[in-house]
Length: 473
Image (cartoon, rainbow, N blue to C red; front, side):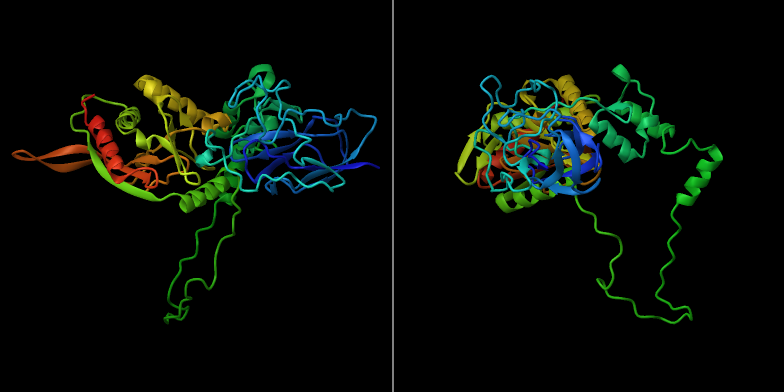
């Protein structure tokens, strides 16, 4: 009997692990070469990983929600010689950070020939009877200066391999992996969702519609009375009122903090897990310094798009002081100034922080900026955003003021040099010649890496940004 262990490959994002979303097989099943084996969630998306062999499934590593380290065993198979197998040395189309093919440049959007994620025979993705070790990506290798390690939250290694996802029929339902993940998140039975997509594919909108109207909850369709009873039963009981008095009405000693902890530890996964790593790395590497001031918007004429004005002001500041529209390599002490302005827009989600790149912001008018940001936000929400859109920005913007807060200390994520934070709009009393006036103002916070830029450069950058925001239109 010949057995093969399949080790979790690097799914093209340089992350040390991935989370199991759904197995498409169980132990004892027979699977054919390149059939979908498992759905895995990374910091960017939910992707299907195909089987590297044909044969009987002997072992599966963990269940839904378990985190698997890259290079660890994902599954073990008993090979079936009567079924198709991949020839030794055959290129699978999924590599681990090698040079791009001659006819495909880094960042190309051309899909792989078979339009699927394909597991690699290289880099220890598969080992015979578990003897081969995984080809490490955890050796601390850093991105080359010419290539950005852009990320969800700015620090994911980019890959030369380009992957496209296709809708896969599982259990008679045809849907993208991201759509299945959304259905699980919303508590929707995808088998009961009315498919409105092409060729009977269940779309993201179909799942959200079903979640909103309650037409596809797991199990039989409940009656309205049963639904009310269910919600009443599911409603948490009101917590008991705490008191410093005993039942007899006498004062009692309270426990000091830390004696007992409530709640259960939650393992960080996917985007939030990567965010924790990125922020820790940024804290260890960058020498952050912050400047803050208020942009006076009193001269604005009519209703204006605040985000578009912020983008325009950042572009104006980058042109006035290019030192902050740059990348910095702390190991080699080299600085790269960029002639173009690609702005990373921080997008907050329940799963964690995404930073998609608004490309060529210096070439866009207000309408184009609004359209591009709308597209990026929709792709982030649906988890369909390409890896190329999460990499390579030259400066960042966090518009946290749309929720709350005046000033902040936004985190600079290498290799970027600066990030701009926009606080909540306010109406402030301002001294003017001959008296006082009430002006609409926007708090601006600028964090920069003091290794790469001087305080004077940062101050001039901030002034140029404020001056542009102060223009009437």
